[in-house]
Length: 393
Ligand SMILES: Cc1ncc(COP(=O)(O)O)c(C=O)c1O
Image 1 (tube, protein in one colour):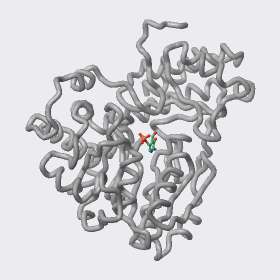
Image 2 (tube, helix red, strand yellow):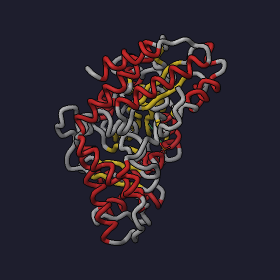
Image 3 (tube, helix red, strand yellow):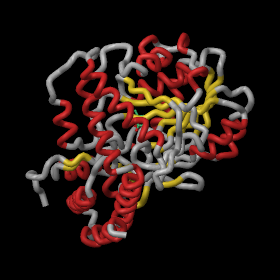
Image 4 (cartoon, protein in one colour):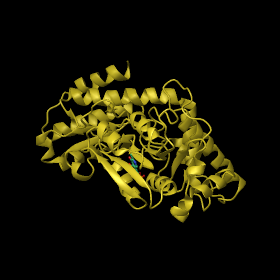
């Protein structure tokens, strides 16, 4: 059961495992952030980001054109703040949709820059679209939402909310941190003005940097004087045209990301989305075969996440959740517990990045063995067979 010879398997929802080439890219000798060598790496990363943001479809058709991808030297929380602070000022009204930790983060960020109306649902529940429609009236300047709510495993309905925002001509900013690069994301069709993603999630890049995509023609909506100096997006757009950022770039991280994005292009987005969906189905089938309940309550048009699976711990396991998590960790597998008030109630596994089907099987076995060790009897072979049905479908 315990095989420490196996490399640590990261199934927590980011950072995800890095490929050998990405690790080597980060270990190359340092260069100046103002050198031609860095600009070449930046250009590779920009071109990879353009591919990922503009090809978020299951069939490889274009989902956006003509916009501007931008690399930011901080994680997605910085990018979320950059998005909001460059698009609104103190006189403006933001509607923030909140049904998990990251929706809450967007709301808290927006409260620093504008007046905020919150449309909340319990963490793990779907939004009531009638309440969303009622909140987004003509006074609203900006709507924020999270596509894939990592804290609960819910895939929120961006298309439906985008229609409501468009009807009142409000800007629409979407956190696609755990969907973009792993699941479908139709930027233009959904009316997204600005999308945010993180390096260390579905892009399988090293943590520390993030990216945004400003839809075509939206530069004129930027109000840089309102926001932080460091994330003045007008300045970032100008510098990106020269394959630079305004300040000192994180040279090894940009190189790592450039390489990771080339690997995604080699796999192709349609193949990557299909793989992520099959692996998420495999996790769901395996845990159902272990008689475990999914955590989120999904009502259309919301859906189950295809990148993060959240499972309710059985009552007897909840009472000693630490023993369960320790038993998973002993197998050199990293999964996550619940965030905020969900700590000790749920566990979460990610299938983001470049995981193989054998990695998924190893994760299922690790969870099964850990459950057995805390006296929750499970049929591990049955769970693996259920997973295989999905992986081999
Ligand atoms: C949906 C979502 N948004 C934003 C973030 C923020 O990321 P970071 O902590 O890298 O800033 C995360 C991180 O897990 C996330 O899952």
